[in-house]
Length: 225
Length: 225
Image (tube, rainbow over all chains, first blue to last red; front, side):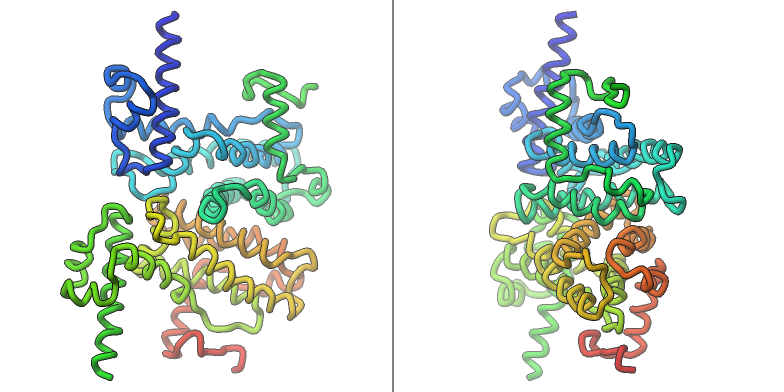
């Protein structure tokens, strides 16, 4: 059991190092040696978990969704908004996430790496939340959840990109807030608009609440309080 | 004069070849030799126009805005919508534009190349149109043109990226239409909403009208007809 825990921790250390190196250098320029150096693990340990650079990149891409977890909310549109703010906030400091986003956005990845994966996974994840919002009567009747979430995922990808290019992502939270200011009136019932919190510091506050509660976000249900 | 015309044509041939190579291989993997090979010009001709790979990349980036020109419209919001559809349509076939967009979006560019330039230039260009729309009374009073166009430029960048990753950009026009369906209600006066054409084939139709008229788009004023 202790050995298994160590293996899980080693895998995590490698992924975080790989994320940082992919973020800084991109897929093409990254070498296994650079990741080894950053992670300070043995070659054997790395190859035990990841037989190739492709598999390492794929694992970094696959981690993205888990880093967007937030506490459930009674208003499902609020939960959707929260996911974008928390993801944006984590993008400021989490190297694994930065690397994962760069891999998804760069065109450099070889055919063996599915860099469209995160786009699909995010859309599949968020459409479930928007369908819940519909069931709860939060949406305008004209909303087509699949169309809306695909637009949201694409728009978010570009907005974080522009924020990085212009401002090293320092204004990302403000830009997410502006995005929601433009999108919510076409999605939410008018009566909900003033109740949905889309202040730029929303991500900071949700993360602080998560840390204070010190529980797994997926298992936490603030709506039951 | 003939010599000057030839120089302009050669420069264009080189830029188009460079755009294609940057689009396929990204900044890092592109070499001057690959561009020479594609353009079928002499090394001397290329270095006369572009002393380095950096300067070539910068010139490809700087061409982006000129490829978004559309005929002016009496309704300035329609003109804004048209720019996105025409740009999206040109992205399907114009190698220079594809390369330019890849350079702007990839993080690979070296410090000497300002890959945030197109984001800034687009925002500066579009804000003028949105300000005109405001003067003409087309906008909701809550719209802040600079905020709105920066959001639009970022969202567009991501939507074309997602369309490329998932579908080789074949559904880009539909995605642009969905984006406008979500944004316009927060921007335009309600009475304008049904009059603004955001059908997915808008870009094809505007380009066909441009070609039929066979004039420079910047000099063409459909509103005067």
